[in-house]
Image (cartoon, rainbow, N blue to C red):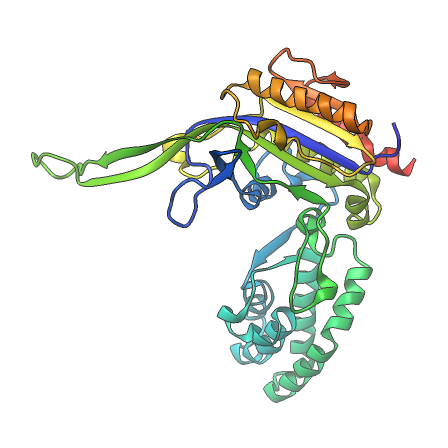
Length: 374
C-alpha cells in the first residue's frame, strides 16, 4: 500500500422507534435526497456523543490525552472562581474583566457577548496559574492588580502563543481531532483532521407521531390522564461517513504516531458502538453498526452516499448490495486503489476488502500512522 493520507470510514447503523436528533421544533432532523425525504443525524450530534462517551474506548482513556471544555464560562468557573478560595472577592473581581476580554475578545466581559469556546486543560491551567501569580504579586492592592492585569492582557496573545507552541495538545484531544475556531484570536484556530458527514437513512423516512399520557398516581378515583402529549418517533438504517486526514491528525498530535494510532483505534470503536440519541428513558435508542468499511489511500476521499440517491429497501442486505455495486463502479472508473477492511453482519462481498471483526478493523486502523512515519 502506498503511504496513506486518508482513512475513510463508512457505516450502516440501524435504529428503531427512536428520536435520535431533534430540530428546533422537537421533530426529527430531516434531509431531502433523491426525491425522497430522509431522517438525518447531524454531524455535531455524532461528534458530541463520540467525544463525551463513557466507554472503555472513550477518548479520555487514552494515555497522553488532554481534556478540553467548551463553554462561555471557562474563565469564570475554571480560572477566577478557584481564586476565591485563596484571595478576596475584590481581588478576583479586579482580575476577571481583563481575563474575560483576553480569552473571549473585547465583548467578553458580558456573558452574552462571548462565543462558546473550547479550551484545553493545559491552556486553562496556565490561565489559572497566571491569575494566581498576579493576585499574589498585588499583595491585596486592587488598583495595582488592575494595572497588572491590564498589562498582562496586552501581552496575552504573544504569551499564550508561546505556550501553545511548546505544549503538546494545548487545546486538548477534542480540538486536535475536531478542530477549533476562535474569532477573537485566529492564531488559536485548529484545523480539524476528522471530517464527519451528516448521517441519513438509506431509505425514505419512517416516522410516526406517538400519542402518550401520564396518569396522576394521587388523583384517587378521578378517571383519565393527567398529561397528554405527542412526540415523533422514527426508525431507520443510517449511512454514516467519516474521513480522517492522517497527516493532519499527526500534526495536531505533535507527530506522535503511537498516540495517533490509539486515537484511531478508539475512534473506530466509538463510531461503531456509541449511539446518538435523546429520550433515552422512553426509547432505549441503542444500536451498533451492522456494517463498517474502512478505506486507506492517498487520493482525495469520496463519499458513497450516491449509492442511496435512489432509496433502497430498509434492510442491511439490500443496503450493502447497493453500496458494493456503487463502489465497484467507482473502482472501475477511477482506479484509486484504496486498501480496505470490512466488518459486516451480512455475507456480501465488498470489492478488494479483507473481512474481519471490529477488533480487527480497529487494529488495522491503529497501524496506519506508524506506516506513515516508518
